[in-house]
Image (cartoon, rainbow, N blue to C red; front, side, top):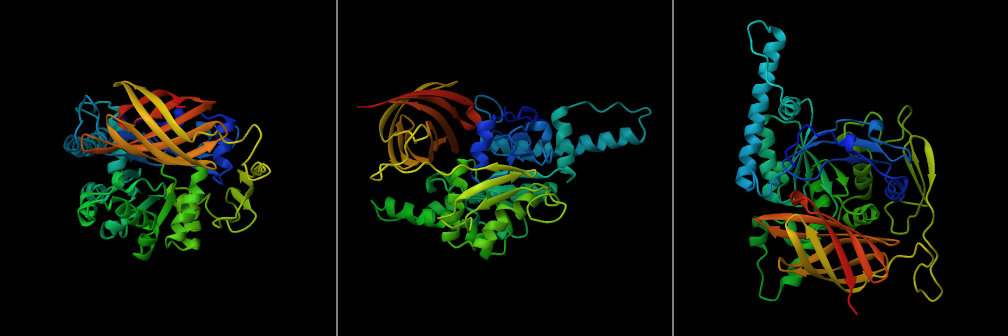
Length: 433
């Protein structure tokens, strides 16, 4: 896994109408579906969020080849050094493969037919600039490394993530970028340059974290002031958090009109679909979001979403119970505040975790403590009985984002977790008295 440049994600795309609705109700009309793990991850597709959608209805396919810096645990390449070496050699091999294919096509007589290698063949249009390379790079070191790679092989590249872009504006200037507004914890994304510059007095970690959070939330604003043009993306956070986080970016200095453009027109252009999406013009696809006011205002409520000209109503949030007790009824958010004993079962074996949760409405935060240390909970969201969150662990010198999804049944919870390059896992949890 993670070494599949020929993987066509549109062929694997499956989603129920309910799953599609949850994303669409957040004001999202189309999504870039992409593999998320490994070094050469595969080819993404732009999918419209219709109830009846499947991968064959992609608006653009492929959009890009997705590249990262995650190794293969227990295999090769496993270390960052090995990943970089494998990555560069693969691109050199793809250049050679393209040359051999051209020679054979021009005059096959007396020439051995080039070997058929699906993975290598998928990289040929990438090194020729015919298929964009979306390179996942968040901290300063990753961004600079990705830019150097793009220059070396003259890739048509887009830096995806750029969480610490404000530290590398010189490298990003004049380059395409998709900036994530998932706002992970500072310690999970910052490079050595930032960490060393932020040393403070003992016991001052909380204050340092607050300052780092300001910088991370102000990242998009800083890039805009530096003259860097970018699109905004959720970064894998819960759909309902996308607009909320975009508003945080605006509050931290990103002009509202730039934020709106970055979520619409620029996002469509980044996916190669600027000719059919992203703005209201004659002849473009009717993908529209209807709200009761400025979409980036805290009071905004989405009432309808159009996808391919099809109107989908967005139900208002449940009414609050008398006395401010919160929404009621069957769709009321699960109450998960407190301590949980969670067991994560992965290909590496079981791991016991103590999860401590602080819930505020439909959001939550907290910590997860295990033999791997204590990690903060990020992107905690509750939709009915479904809960989603992330945490970041440090392993082998790399930051690995774990993405959890669970279903709550009273004092019990079951679900799955995506472990980055380590695959997938299941978990069970029980709330402590």
